[in-house]
Image (cartoon, rainbow, N blue to C red; front, side):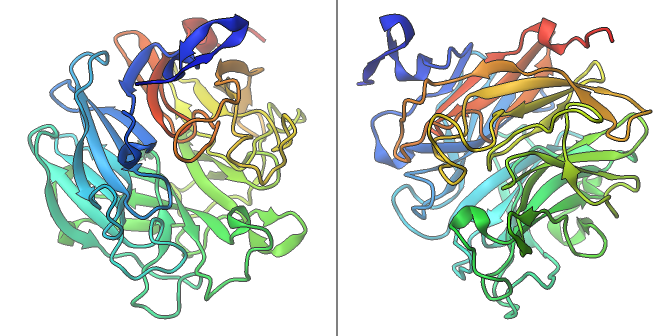
Length: 421
């Protein structure tokens, strides 16, 4: 049975209710094998069904990651998730992690993921080949295809048998030519980089990008044209504070601007979001710099946590972030299990005349859990690795709460309307 806890005002709440969700997709039973639920991507199949894809494990880092999928006709009632690939719960090895979907113009669903092949480097959940699943019946059944080759660069292990350390966590968008592009984190191999000065968050890492050039033609994996960007093979760097020889630039989130440029935001360990621009669909990028609310404005604070930027149907953008620099409620930047809250959203508006071509509004508090820990990871983080959908006049942020409960919150329409300037 779910434990009831005391919420604000002395009102008893079931824990999954604490963040006041509008939709419930998945609430774990008291079972250690389904305790961790993260990288929560909701998307629509060509037949109109809603699908929710995420990575599930007994606890993050245990070694039994597997991809699961749930289905809904109406975004309200969700089926029990079924496993698509990866470890059996509680069994270490053969993981499938961080799956992300592409629905082609003809309706085929591809799912790509980090495939553990049993040759670990940094760790087995972020190290592996690019696995492929596909479905031609709107996600009812999936077939596995051969892994996609990944080109190597100087940050990989010198032994070519050891796969790259990489993840993708968002749904790809379309670039100026209609091709699918998405951000990638590449962590450097310990054999090719300095040791981290202070824990996992200081590991050498770079923001890169992955583009699928012919996926709407439904090729098998041997004919799929995949570009790893920038074209130099070297990613975007942001120095770790006090260590110019180490970069911490991770989890880039990409949006297309009206002028055809790509705008990417990324998490760092500086206490702020950073951004970069590309005028050639990701082949080259400007040097990253801190993201501000507007030119000359305050930089936007963020701990070492995902900070996605979503393009909206009305041409504006929605930034999801945590609005602190890692120092919050007595916690410090390396306390990542406790400083990734509350979740805020800020509306961005394109301004062609600005050096930073998106201006952001003052943030709205979107979701919080009162810093009550839950789940096997004992974290209070919220809205890390979320997704966004817009349909039938409703905008929904799909978010993990404490990497345990999977929920949806309807974003008020008034938050999505640009203010007059």
